[in-house]
Length: 75
Image 1 (cartoon, rainbow, N blue to C red):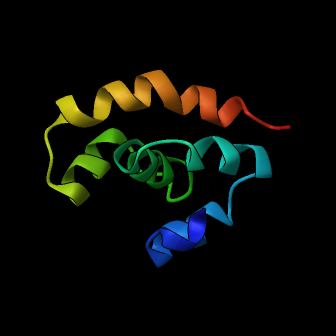
Image 2: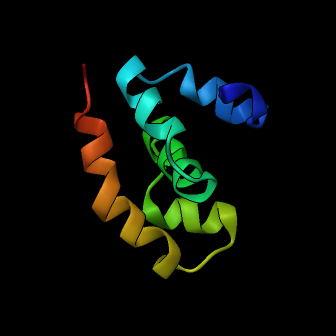
């Protein structure tokens, strides 16, 4: 349930579609965190790396593998 998430994630989940929210809530915290920054705040991989102070090798695989899939979920 979203109630156990940080408030910024709950707010971000409120800004995506119902179907996207369902998929994101089934993810572990790290991929959900990265994908919400990308989908809701429209941050690039470079901006996410800077914000989270992590190398590109932690962020790039998530964005290339999941972001397009999550963005395509519309139902």
